[in-house]
Length: 89
Image (cartoon, rainbow, N blue to C red):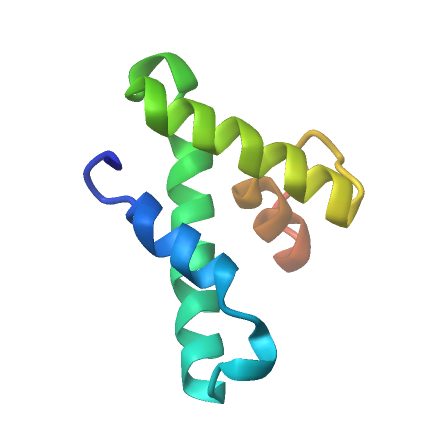
């Protein structure tokens, strides 16, 4: 079960099982938008305030993101700030 405001874990699993080549452009876009929203929510809440299942899934997601994109240790929100120049002090 996922925490309130989060993408259901069953959706994440079913999306990862179906190969991208079998998905329509609309499905891929929807998944991309909901993934971004979920990653933002993942970074906005501390692991100790999440359910144990949600915390475990989020930790696995962060590890996968770091491996895939070369982790900087920053959150999705930090990356967005960097993109628009709001990280400047």
